[in-house]
Length: 90
Image 1 (cartoon, rainbow, N blue to C red):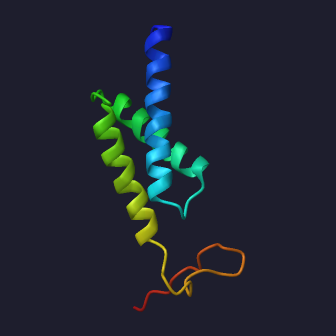
Image 2 (cartoon, rainbow, N blue to C red):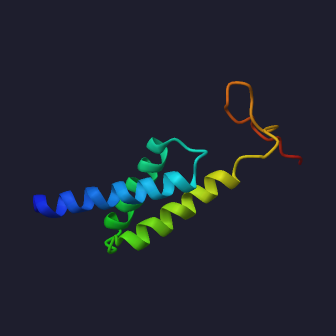
């Protein structure tokens, strides 16, 4: 990729990261940046056009999923922050 395009891609990723970090304040900016970069890399790997709109939409979906996967009560977490394994009946 030519340096000019790489710089544009980096600036776009920074803007997306800032916008999503402001929306998802429960995550560190580094976590949001990693999510944006991972989505962008995944789309590129799959041969899809990683437009800013698509990257933002998919990164937002991933972050929402991460938020929803945390139990609001915190009862599923151990003091060290790791999840307890769930026992399955049967």
